[in-house]
Image (cartoon, rainbow, N blue to C red; front, side, top):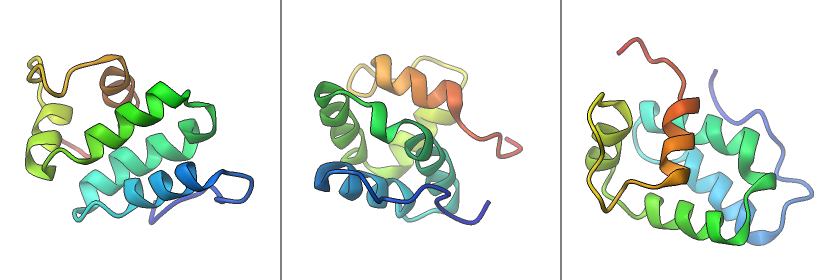
Length: 95
C-alpha cells in the first residue's frame, strides 16, 4: 500500500483535512496506521470522534507511534475509545 485508497470526494472540509493529515504524518509507519484507519472510518466518525482524532494528530509522532505499537497501556493523555479502534485496526508492519 502506497497511499490513500479513498477519494476525498463527498467529504466535508474537516474530514478532507483530517484524511490528508492522517496520510502525511512524517513517517511511513504512521502514514500506514493512521491513513489506513482514516480511509475506512473517516466518513463515519461523529463530530466528537473527529475532535478526538484531531487531538491524537497533535500528539508528537514518536509518542503516538510508541503507544500504537506497544503491548502496554497508553498514557492517559492518549488513551480513549478512538485510540483503541485505531490500534485494533492498524496495519501489521512486521513489528
